[in-house]
Image (tube, rainbow, N blue to C red):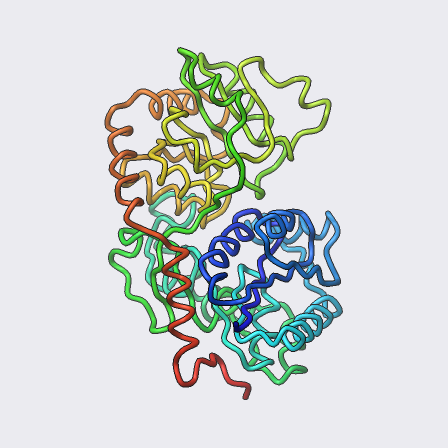
Length: 414
């Protein structure tokens, strides 16, 4: 069997689980192996039965925080030093050779953009549509949490900066040159592989045209192993509504605590897999109607929870859609806000900003998600549409179709 090398950012839960789902769809016909640097969610890879190569150098907690802040537009400190990028590219190239991998499938492990191309093998990227090159090129409004009258000024400037301005960190330019790879220039090029597999529903692409190296494959979200704990079933049998709070891996302790306190004031029960954000002291102050847990197999929550409060990451949003759960979404960055906005237009979600947590608007929105028949009906319609999709299988088919072509290589070295 040919070897496919998967390269998620392993401190990002959604990316790690998305790669696992695609690898599951390919494992019967290919040997799927994983690389990563940080160990945070690598246990899910190992538990799924895949080989995981932990490479060096990895980031410390401060560097991970800076990378997350940079991704969310909250910071400008660049953790990609010349030394780190050089060493990561070298480590990845060695692993590609040692495993004889015929392709790399990455999350947003941006050094793969250099290592895969330097080794002359195609690079695949299962990715949300928001903030891709065609999305930014063709989107006129709704990307930023700003007044509508400002967008005609902001969007052209952002489009020029993102898709054309030479803003790639210097380390990537140096490493590309040293590895005889065409240099990355714009920020858009940092989020564009040789083949881009869009993990979205058909309605998310209405009004857009796609370049030839982009195609829609459909939703891909986590199916974590195991069963739901008994406490979830006990809470679901209570006469009180049950609300699910999920903040993924890109939120913060502050947001988790604020949301827990706000939900604690409502006449509901809450199950919240946010233990990874809380200290022991925080746990003692959790409201009585809130049950904090570790990560849950959320795809099993359909029919048990009445509504959800989500941070807007594509994985949590798609899980809610697939299980027919209406939700309140509070995106932390443009891609997450876009995910929520798409659902709000369909009627199965209510979009808020994180700063609205604790306000009457937040409480009113949660009640609407629980009680409003129109919102529930839209969630049911969305669930039925999701039942016709399998993004992991579609992504696997796309990868195999490209590899079967006479020349599956992507970007040639100059």
